[in-house]
Structures are given as structure tokens and as C-alpha cells.
Amino acid sequence: MAKNNSKHSEEVNAPLAHGATVLPLVTIDDYNNELRDKNGFVGDNANKQTFQQKLDDWRKHVRKFGDDPIGKVATAKLSKKKIEALLKGDDMEAAALVMGAVEDFAQAFAEVIGKFLKDKRWGKTERIVVGGGFRKSRFGELAIARTMVILKAAGINIEVVPIIHHPDEAGLIGSVHLMPPWMFKGYEAMLAVDIGGTNVRAGVVEFGKEKGPHFADARVWESVIWRHAKDEPSRSATIEKLAAMLQGLIDKAEKANLKPAPIIGIGCPGIIKADGSIERGGQNLPGGNWESDSFNLPAALIKAIPEIGDHSTFVMMHNDAVVQGLSQISFMHDVSRWAVLTIGTGLGNAHFTNREGMKAR
Image (cartoon, rainbow, N blue to C red; front, side):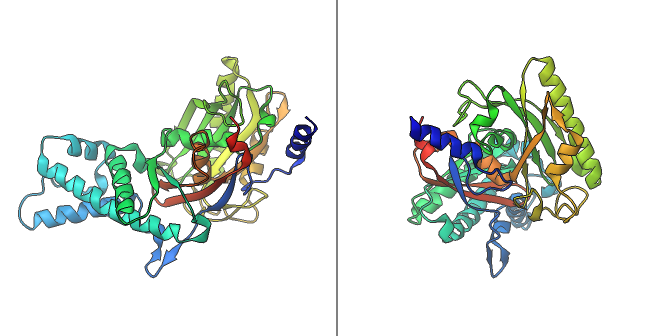
């Protein structure tokens, strides 16, 4: 008993820092890895634009000998829903074009994964979870499955699987693992934010019946999204809008008698320093200059929302791929070393090693 009390005391007194590498259940071995080869960033070979380019290449080949079954619409203008319809439709030639792009993308993705696995921080990886917007489609899931088959055929025994939660919700749910569970005692939920180059999403995450340490049944109770790319807001306008979104969620939770902890978890692109500033990687965020020495997102949010309920607001921030990966913790008890790759505008990445607490359920 004394040993457990001592351990709890260490957890209570342990300093909490943004972008921490040691969390309650996992150690973060690597994230935002800017792996390069002779052609530039390796991740640029497996993102949303990569798939579009593969599909566009197939369309160009077909046009040399006849009509394009997809028509005249530009590939970049094809929505995920439209590509899904082509894949499932009666026009076999159009479906074959999509399948050709799936195969080519899977080949490129397998090559990218192979290069990541050569990094010593990614050694002995047993499973890679794939998130991001690309995973939300049938063609994305097919590409993920085909990638694993290609790797296994090459003698690389690794699982490559779609993220369990909806990618939009995973980026919020993972925030519950940024802090030790004792911080949530007496509360039923927390606020979470996922900031990207196209959208800002905020939500209320319910802890579920388990209430830690694994939060196996944590879920998004309510969320709101702002597609800021259309508005081209300044940085200050972005913070103002985000604060309004959060305050609206706080009010809604309180009206529903759902008591949120005075905590906001944030997933944000880039390398996150211990003081909450962004070292690099925030160049696509709205308004620019998020990496300025004079700007600190957690501090700006605390200033905008100084209290939640009767307590002072506490903010914890980490890389967005890390947070999305953390949502998978309750599904990772059968492996020791695992990773997340998020396919969107870029290729987000993070690698984890389970700590001792992961074994106790």
C-alpha cells in the first residue's frame, strides 16, 4: 500500500509540461519527424495530394486513347464522396481508375513506412495506426489494407490499420491522456481542441464510466467545427473565434448538468515546447506567425477563458498527430511499440512505447 501511495505522490508532484515525452501510459519516442531523402520530405510522398496525383496520372493515360470515364472535372475538385461513388458505381472503367490510384498510393505509402522504420526511434514497431481525413473513405481504407499486404510481401511483419475512432473525434478524445487521471476527479468531461491548417474543431469529451487510466469508453459528447480556410482569419481573430466556440460548449455542458473539468487539451501541428510555444511546424495555421517568440497559444486561451466553473482554467497542448494517436491507447495492450501516421494535407507522425501502467486493466 505504501508503494502505491508513493507512486501516486510522485504522479501528483510531477511537473506537467506541454509537448511532454513521458505521459501517464506511454512514452513518446518521436513525433513530427521531418525525415528526408534526396527528393525532400519523405512524408510528401504519402498525403492527400499524393493520392490525387496518382488518380490524375491514370486519367491522363486513359485520355491518350479515348474518353475519360470520370469526365472533365479536375481531379483536385473531386470530393471524397464522388470518388467513393466512382469506386462503388456501375462504370467499371471509372472504378478501375480509382483502384489504380489506390494501388499506386499504397506502393508509395509502403515505401514511406519502410523509411520511417529504418529510423532507430521507430525500431521494433509492431503496429501503425492510420488516421487523418484520408482514412474516412472506403478508398482510403483499401489503400491502408493494401499497404500492409505490400509490406508483409516484402518481409516486413507489421500491422497497418485504420484508426478506430472517427478521425475528427480521435483528435479530441486523445486529449484525455495528456494529463494524469487524478486531475479529473470529481468531473465528468473536459474540453478539447484540434487545430489544423483548414479547420478548427472544439469539443466536450466525456470520460465515460471507467474514468481512467485508460478511458476506454471516452467519447465526444458535443463538438463544433470552424472551416477557417474559407475566412482567412488573422491569428488574433482565430483565438477570439476559438474562445467563443469553447465558451459555447461550456455553457451547453452546464445546461445539460455535465460538469467539465477546468481543463482544455489542445492538439496543434508542429514541435511543441514545454512552455506551450511552437518551435516549428505551425506555418499552415491561420493568420501566420504562430511560432513567434511573443505568442503562446495556451496563455492566450487562459486569458480569453480565465475560469471554467469555479476554478482557474488549465491548458495542456501537444502535437496533433500525438493527440490523435493517444486516442488509441485502450486498443494497444497487445503490443509494446506502436505508431500513428495521419494522412491529410501533410503526413503527421508519432511513435509510442507503452509504459508499465498499460498492462493493468
